[in-house]
Length: 164
Image 1: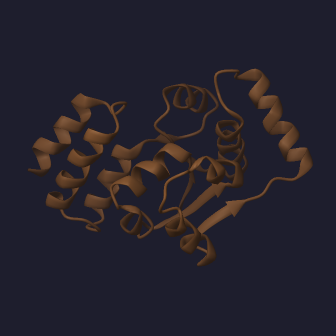
Image 2: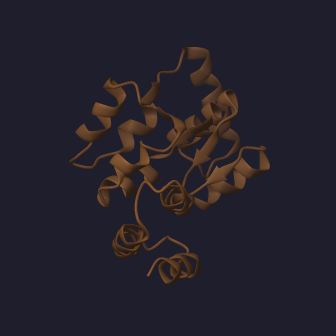
């Protein structure tokens, strides 16, 4: 089974385009840190709580020694936030894949031998697993592109063309 650690930007993107229900149908084990959840300020974060309460999204609370290690990561990588460092720490501890859209985090994770994916990987998985149709993927990705200017436009356009 694939273990996934979710960064806030991934959860926010999925909440904004109402794709959380599909995401949690993937055959994966989902993890999030309490520090990341504090960053998710969407009005519909109650949706996340339901997945946490249901045991689908596992929320990690850190011990004092773990928080010290996360702080140490933050000193090493000044361009990352404490919640970002908590994702790196948990991904490494679980040997899990990291889901993030942040370029700096992707670079640092890859340099630490952590597999990294973004929201486009999620779309690919959802379509490949037949959890959503290509038409739904096209619609949701088009909507996400209008909300998130940080997405890789050329990669998005390839998928939109494929799913049209």
